[in-house]
Image (cartoon, rainbow, N blue to C red):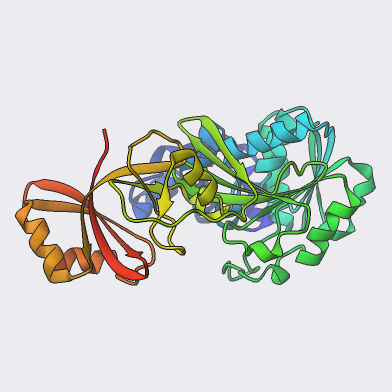
Length: 394
């Protein structure tokens, strides 16, 4: 989509096209396009409307019902923050006393809209003209045009002395190709500019990729990893007055937030495989808080480099899934296949940490047949490849 096509969607004819596209989206795309053209819509307008309808349908998982009125791009939707995460971040900024916020690289406006809903005046800066226009339109659709304004320009040129807080979500996809950028030095704005913000603005938050190297975390910053219903979705660096502690894992499940904190430098004690296995949430693992979780569970690890925890008793925790270990065996395809056959296991969930085996290939090689289910955990114990057969706890 270009600016002219976007402008066409903002006309009364475009609004009618979007309504018509919403009614046929989700089915066969060729049939949907033919239906719109048969209704007299120009081909270009029909295609743009169908693209928006499909993106809005996908965006419902991130934004809820609000997605139905938003304007989106594929790359923008990919990087946009989920509403539940953005709302929590906005509340923390508000509670810290932030009243004016610069969103540098605001994208489609997901975080800026959350901050505006929280009562913060937001100034968005976006380098891409189409994305900037869409962000402004999204502010209008949400009834927040007075609280969130957007300018198209260079985020590094924004005068941050105008605000008491900064949020920055550097672009992590290359312009044109859309390919992921893994080197923070190639982010836009560049990483040196982003990390320097904390020295210029007392309340600075930077959204980063969950796979960020801990060595890149600025001194004194709080690094937070966030998961939603078991999916690791983002990490953020809280700088300046916002930094409360070194590491935080935030686990959002069923609308509730659970937080585990610590130094990120502790090591869990090593011990044998015990009756119960705890598989930590990915936010806990990435935040290097496995040792802190082990302490709350009375658990140990069986290999210093593997983040599975083992305990003698089961427990309920939002930070890990608990399985009961029924069998422990040095990995052998033949022995594992025979054991599962004897147990009449026909369905397996395959988990792995520290194993190079491909789960789907192993599933085929096991040649399962039976009416029972089991979980197979591929891991290492004291450096040795090991298979654990498990079942869910109550």
